[in-house]
Length: 167
Figure (cartoon, rainbow, N blue to C red):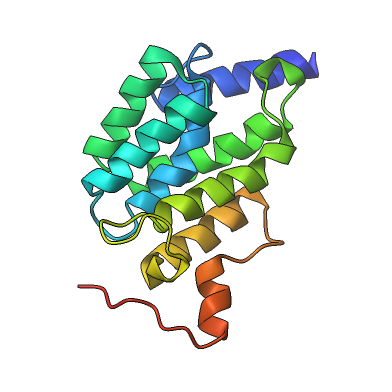
């Protein structure tokens, strides 16, 4: 009975987000998209890295990729991100039929930080994470209940390595 209730709840909220049980895995990319939009725009390097990650590390299918490309092209609003991050956490704690585990949440945060480090100048420079991206990473960590790690950017800042200036 509880499993059916969880399944029904998940299907309703996924439907509200424009996602269904066939392409729900695209939600795993929402934290990455959230940090990608933190600076206000998604450049071509980040857009390509998001698509590459989707192809190489996530099995999202054709429809999932269309949803991802929509998120890259048109920024979802704050309420959508909040609901989506909440649903990622619910999926991680849901019964096994969703094929998504709590152990994946830390990895999603690591992938989100990789997106934050992606710039036209440097593909993976830890110091390229801006303050707005650092805030987004903190919000993601809080929303997903992953609070045991810090980004390389914050660790380097603690060591007095300056962040790049944002325009």
